[in-house]
Each structure stands twice: as C-alpha cells, then as structure tokens.
Amino acid sequence: MNPGEVITHHSSKEERDYLLEYQSIDINSIQKVDILGVQVDNVSVDEAVAKIAHWVDNKEDFRHVLFIDPPRLMKLRSGKILHRITDKASMILAEGAGLNWATQGKLKARVPVIALLMDLVRLAELKNYTIFMLGAQESVIERVFFNLTRHFPKLRIVGRHAGHMNRQRELMVKEAIRKTSPDIILFAQDFPEQEIWIENNTGFFGKSVVIGVSGAFDTLSGKEKKAPDSFQLKGYTWLWRIIARPYRIFRMFRILQFVFMVLITRIKNKRQNK
Image (cartoon, rainbow, N blue to C red):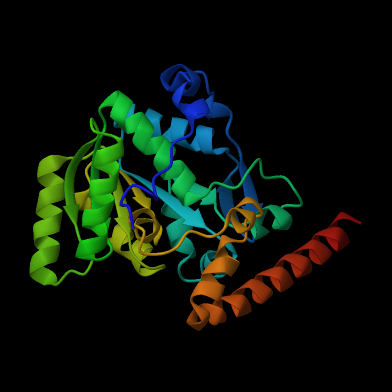
C-alpha cells in the first residue's frame, strides 16, 4: 500500500484562506446541547478547529477534547461513574450520527475525528503549532508520522511514542511531553482507558490541548480500512467497524440501550411539559 493513500487533499480547502476564516468565527457564540446529561458542544468542524486554535494561541490552561458516539455516551451519561470525565472535558464533540437523532436535529453537524485532525494538521503547519503523538503500536505511529510529514513537510511533530507503556516507559513519555511542551497532544488508545489516562495525568500536560483520537492512527496509517463513503456520510462509521470487526458486536447492545434511554427521556419530558 502506498503510505500516502490514506491522507487526502481537497483542492477547494487548500485554496481557502484558513487563517482568515478561523479568525472570523465567533467561538463565544458556541452553545451546548444536552444528551442524556452530557453537555455536547454544538459545533461544525471549522468551529471546533477555531476553538482549539484559540486555546493554543492563548495558552491559558490544559484542555481536553473528547469525542463521543452513542456507545461511549452510555458509559459517560449522567449517573455513571465516568460522567465525571465529561464534566472536566473542555470540549465534547459529537462523532456518531445517532447523537443528532437524539437531539431531534439540533446539532449543527457531526465532527468526525479524521476530518478534524486533517484540518487541524493543516492549520498547525500554517501556524507553526507543535504536535506530540502518543498511542497505538510502534509500526502504526511511525507510518502516521511518515504520512503526515510527507504531505505536510513543515509540520512540527516534536515527539511520538507508542501507547503500550510499562511504568518506566510511561515516565519517559511524560518527561518527553514536559520537555517539549507541545501545543497539541494526539492520544490514541481504546475508550475509556484513553480518557482515564488523560484524567490521571493532567499535571504533565502543561497548557497543551489533548485530543483523544482513539483508532484514528490506525486509519491514517492504513492499518485499518476506512469506512466506505456511503457509511461515513450517513454517520454509520460505527456500523462499518462492527462489520469489519465482528467481535465488537457488543457495541450494538449499547446502541440499543442508547435508543431506549433517549425515547424514555423524551416521554418524560413530554409529560413534564404538559
């Protein structure tokens, strides 16, 4: 496989004045939508990138960007132990199509991880942001590094480490993050281990923006085949993952639970509004 095949360019986007467009976005007007007790940022991909750029430029504090879909939401919803993570997250982005259904069409758009990453990488090259990549297997992260630096030669990736860490390696990674003080940290692990690790190590991130990207490195490296366009456009990437990896069928039960919970909530709200 050609290492560059998984990185795509869109000429219409390359011709845009990215800096001007992001600067013109009013991030203060961004609102949130409640989904089963989780406050999801109601943003487009451009608005999400603009908000991240604002954090990087101002460096006020550590920031955590969390992506959710229906199965993850069932573990993060109000009343669950992991709900604390949503309270601490700086921005929560709706990746799964079912979330828009849950809000009855109130969300502006889905924010796919890959779409946000590619726009953010393009902006990082323009604004000289530094990026630290953490997670996945060694071969995967090296291929992602190769792909990104090949397509974005001025991109500053100041560190990269695989995600399978023993105690000694973990200390080394934390020290590397401390020394490089990256603007953006892309962290790829399974959910919810990824989010728990971020929560437990905020003291090492300085004022970085940490983005949990889960399996995005596998896709960008070419290890995991991308979902067909028909699945991506309709927001059914999760279904493609189940088809590609049948052992993940247990996610279907969480999705059914999600649908049931949303319907119950709607019924309760209707009764309260009468």
